[in-house]
Amino acid sequence: AILASSLTSISVAASSNWSIEDDYTSAWSRQQAEKVALTEETTAPIIDMDFEDVAPDVWVWDTWPLQNRDGSLANVKGYRIAFALVAPRTYTWHDRHTEARIGMFYSKNGKDWTYAGIPYDYDNALGHMQWAGSAMLDEKGKVHFFYTATTDMNANGGKEFNKDGWVQRAEQRLAKTTFDISADKNGVHLTNEGDHQILLEADGHHYETIEQFQEHGNIITGFRDPFFFQDPNTGEEYIIWEGQAGTNRNDLKPENIGDKEYRDTHTVPDHAKFYNGNIGIAKVLDNDVTKLEILPPLLESVGVNHQLERPHVVVKDDTYYLLTISHEFTFAPGLSGPDGLYGFVGEGSLRTDYKPVNGTGLVVANPAEKPFQAYSWWAAPDGQVISFINEPLDENGQVQFGGTFAPTLKVSFDGDTTKIVKEMQAGEIKPFGPYGRSLR
Ligand code: FRU
Image 1: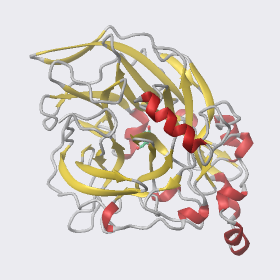
Image 2: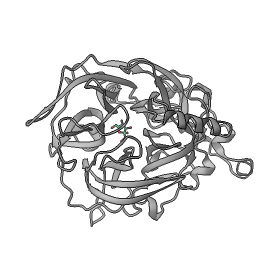
Image 3: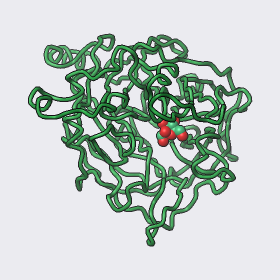
Image 4: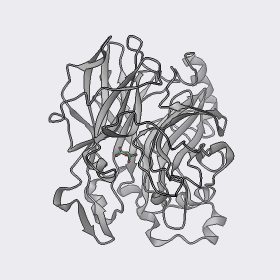
């Protein structure tokens, strides 16, 4: 299979794909982003307001399953395992980010989940808080636990002033630890916690550092959400994350705006260039995933959107879908789009010429009448999409706080189009993978 697919990529190479080391970054242009729009195929159904809290004592948000190296869902003595950001409900909904930890959940049927608490000693963990990541179970039974080590957002009053206004100080670095895993009739246990180590920091060139951000940055800096990914076509392994453009890309280039006709007929608001999101990638150099080689970003949204959060990949044969979540409030001046799961599609290799899927770029969007009902969608290799209930409006139009698993969606991927085909139960995960195949 590897031979067949590498032959195919050779034949496509002439047109649009690059080797992973090449300095080619696709741009999500302002011209493309003007096409963002809700459609029937990509708008999620309205979530019922009588949802249950999966873990009543904690707020639950960004969620990811334990995967095997090849991306398939791990099965530990019949249990499925998921991790999610958690914070005690004694903190307000909005303060939860400042005290985030990673909690563990397990389930035998993939529908009824037991909350098992925080599996690590957070005095050993790096960062004041731990933000989103991913988790991989290797062939020797070690859990590789990737996360974002984030500094205290409340230090020095939490905010700093730069020439453009108030910005949030929260330095982020990519980190990991390891565990052994076991399961018995009492559930799943993570033991033998390893050292916590920093895997990667922003280099300032391709990826903005906090110091560079403080010069002119806006909203919040981004170097977070490490996602472990083994390319099914090459066997190479990568860490992919949310970054922001460093010194070499912090001005608008023609490709950030659009084609010549578009550029001649549109003016770009001055402040737009400070919205400098990108999707970072590093090559994994060792079997224990401790040595990484930082590479130029796969995609950037300079001038378009400040945040391409929790990036991840779905592969179907030679077609690569680069998926990321983004918010309405992080679109650059002059552009708009809903909170949603956005997707970019390209052929032949992971570093390719990515174009927005469906013409609109949207894979899953909240319905217009409930614009913030869910967030942090994450697509499994077979198109099951999990997320959390965020801030749905009740029947009186009042904001409610969710903090629990949202109904899973099933999305089909077909060429450069996608479609929501089914709504499943809250938090439901069926066995999946390797890429594009369901185990059932
Ligand atoms: C997405 C996100 C992630 C981050 C976490 C912090 O919902 O912003 O990018 O890791 O939430 O709470």
